Length: 332
Image 1 (cartoon, rainbow, N blue to C red):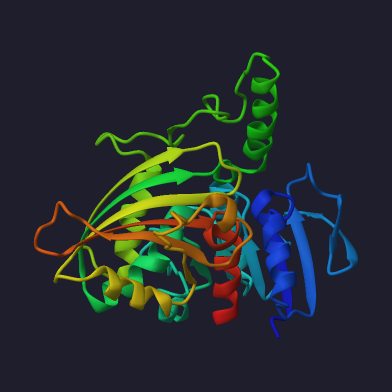
Image 2: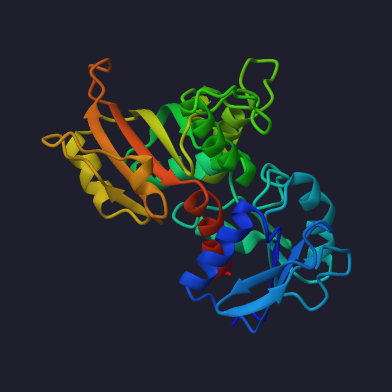
């Protein structure tokens, strides 16, 4: 029993998904509290057939709370997660605030569950595109150490929040009606378009999303020697991220060996039917707990047999955020 559970950022897209996942997995608790900004305070929320009132997040909100699931943005986490931890609450934080802090474990339960037990009150949930990638990549790395990863992402609007999902739907309607489109949430038109991920570009030309994928993978794998490069792109999809992954292994590996490893890997579902040209799609990975993996083939540009290409798709709001956080809580 987890005693008193709090959901911080309860009215946002991930907060809403937290509630769905907690209910579907029948997560044990004695009491649950929903916290959000003063704007959302007082709103009714229905959970497991009962109606609750959203409370305003304050410094004294964590008295008697055993577990807090945070998804309210980095600045809120930076301020309130340490306050919660000091009052004896274990925080699972979905923002980027503590991911690269050396004293905070960064966890995907299928990859590094043992790291959960090193926490000092806060556990970080990795970035969504990183989570979706490492679930199928880690079991391969355990069998045949990876030397290099080249990743291209196709990231859904949900990664930019609920309002970005609404904007995609509204823009699609406006576009088909011949109306002028004026982006408000995302920097460019997202309907019938795609663009480089809308995070800040660093001095080296990599955006923050790409840098997260590199650093977070190194941290969770406890291995800084893997060469990783990523190109992250926002696409007109509602809630599931897809990724093209090129892998260079230490030793030669066959397509069938990769399939065999992934067939029994936790959190992975093979969707790899060449005959029917049927492979992972965001439409089908939406609302799924598993990461769909397919297009598994030998990289013909690596004649030594050490290269494999694959294509994956996973629900950004579930495994990429809420589900992973709840799985961390279950480990505790």
